[in-house]
Length: 185
Image 1 (tube, rainbow, N blue to C red):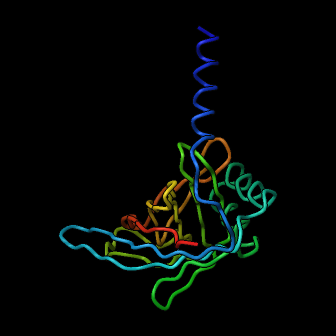
Image 2: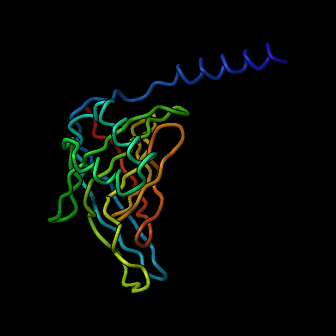
């Protein structure tokens, strides 16, 4: 049984390694369409995401350790101290990306981006306060053909994600569903 498990694990790694993903070249700029639905209303808009580079590993560890051991308030402090690695633009508003991490899984690249200020706050639900929703979170997957899909929270909080990342924990109203395609080189 143990040998069969090792063979299957090895086969899974071989298959994953054989999937050709678009080269991750930085800096990169891409545009995504965002849609959000609240009740009967659907709103669509375009966002431009520019990533100069993926953050340095030491910066990622500093931020995730702050989140794991100090909670969201300490993470927010640590994030604000990190260098800017890109921007997210929506109409005439722009926020600075300070957390940019790329991972490869299931034949796709996962790009997690965090800005230290909210890009927007949707909705008029007075029961949901804006306090503490300090981040813009973008979490997208890019497939082998360059198709982009994922979500954005324009005002959000995060929590630790095992083993060493961040995960969208709470958002102000509803996440914005993102779709797009990487530009052809």
